Amino acid sequence: MKNSGTKKPPAPKIIPRAAHTVSRKEISNSALKVLYRLHKSGYQAFLVGGCVRDAMLDLHPKDFDVATDATPEEVRALFDNCRLIGRRFRLAHIRFGREIIEVATFRAAAVHAADDVAHDDEGRIIRDNVYGSIWEDVWRRDFTCNALYYNIADFSIWDYVDGVRDVERRRLVLIGDPDQRLREDPVRMLRAVRFAAKLDFTIDDSVVEAMHKHAELLSNVPAARLFDEFLKLFQAGAAEKTFHLLREYQLFGQMFPATDHELNEDPAFAEFVVAALRNTDRRVAAGKSVTPMFLIGVFLWAPVKRLAVIRRAEESMSESQSLSLAAYELAAQQQRLISIPRRFTVPMREMLALQPRFLQTRGKRAHNLLEHRRFRAAYDFMLLLSEVGQFDPELAEFWTRVQSQPAPQRADSFQVSAPRRGTRRRRKRRTKPAQSP
Ligand code: ATP
Ligand code: MG
Image 1 (cartoon, helix red, strand yellow):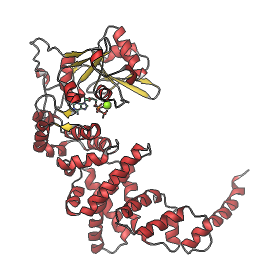
Image 2: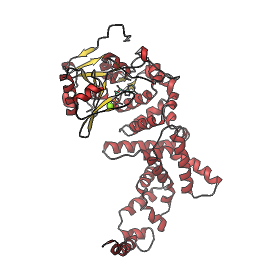
Image 3: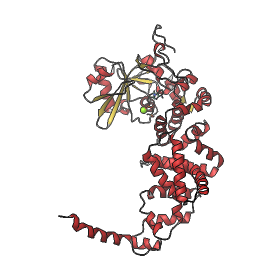
Image 4: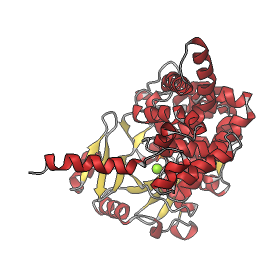
């Protein structure tokens, strides 16, 4: 399918309600309200993208994107709870409590709307801001499975690119020429891996071939965008599988070169990384919180240790100091590719620098470690190391045990005298009268 303004618009395959599995029960009430109101006002209104794909796969979609022929201003006129966002391309966000339904006006992909094409030297799109029709909107989507349109008018699915077939055979196929589509936006390579891991799809050979050619284009992607993508890759519950695929397609090294280098050198480090990813997936599955700083610390651990040894040979400093310095340098290096916010790199450094302190279990300094604001993360990190045989399990056991001990017994464990609690209470009493009127 190619469209060039003058030709007759192509016709989609229309799959009637009775012939597909997307049920309205899978669609949020807010999304349905938006679709129905647009439709009643005389506009076309479709659900599109991941939500249609996921609903077909029985994956209970949570995000709903709407596509329409109404302009953003026309959408805003219909909804009180609507805000227009975006400068280059305006989108309508319609808010229902905590849920936001994103409504986008059909737009022509720059590549195929010949008059408005603008590419940079690498072929990336630098301008794509023309409203279009639904058959043009299809072309700005990445994979065929992401280009299915669910029509609220009769609950049918409109399919211009054989997306339904590709969902059924669980295949990721790029719309159009794979080389061109990856050059336009190299992040699509990461998206291919993410969807393959999350949906258990196979990346089509045509895409794999193009990925081999263009992996290094990832280095042109803005660092802020790569950080967003990093979160989606590793915090969506399929981190381990994602990691293996990224390595298989030589994409991981584009994102984390120092880590990739150590992974190739040291199987024990690879084992630690995989254990951490598995642990992350377990936490996500259990609904527990995950923080990117932990995985970034895991990824940088071997490079940090290696650099710390060098820094210590150059200048006298404690092991902790050398780890902190090395973590600082590696985080800075990593940030040139992926802009990891400081609120993650700072605790990450602290977590790594605390590791040698788990070796010491006697005395006040060891005892105080329990009170350190980064103790919890550092402890989890150490526990993971011990799980893969890279930290003494008896020491790990000690640190687990002392956490549940009452203060006096704990003081005994560390062989320190007066429990700290007593001193604290006395201090509090002394300050109190001064504060009260
Ligand atoms: P999920 O939300 O499960 O990660 P999704 O398919 O909804 O998957 P989004 O990033 O939410 O992914 O994007 C919504 C839709 O926008 C996609 O389905 C796709 O059609 C289109 N899209 C998003 N990013 C790109 C891109 N980089 N290139 C082309 N199309 C894209
Ligand atoms: Mg989505």
